Structures are given as structure tokens and as C-alpha cells.
Image (cartoon, rainbow, N blue to C red; front, side):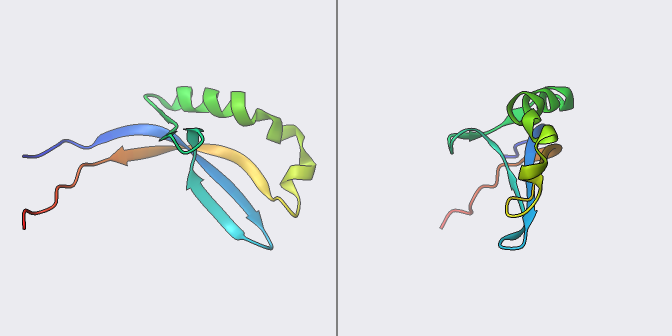
Length: 86
């Protein structure tokens, strides 16, 4: 049985500081419940703007020790992989 992959849009967290180096990860809508996924890039951009738009006006969070950047909308492909029967 073959399952067609699904492509959606997500939000990529980005930060870079001296302690952790570059950090990138897919963001979650609720704390560790499910990834924030959207049907369109515009929906992802709106969600990022609503929840993280304050970062644009916060140079203190962009500098050390935080190094936070605005999340970036990215394409996410979800595929199902089945294990072979043992």
C-alpha cells in the first residue's frame, strides 16, 4: 500500500548565540502537542506574525545571549513509512 506524501507549511525557529551555536527546529502550536502546520504560506506567515511579531522590535532579544530571529515559513513534507513485517 502506498501513501501519497503531503506538503504543508510550517514555522522554522531560528536562533544563533555563542553558547548554543545555530539552532533550528520546527515550531509547535501548543507545547509539544503537534507541529504548527498550515495549508498555505500566507497562513504560516500570519501565525508567525501574530505569535512572534514582537521580535522585530526587540533588538535586546536579537543580541547575545539570546540571538533570536523571526521564525521563517518553510515547506514541510509528511510521508508515511511502513516497517517490513518480521
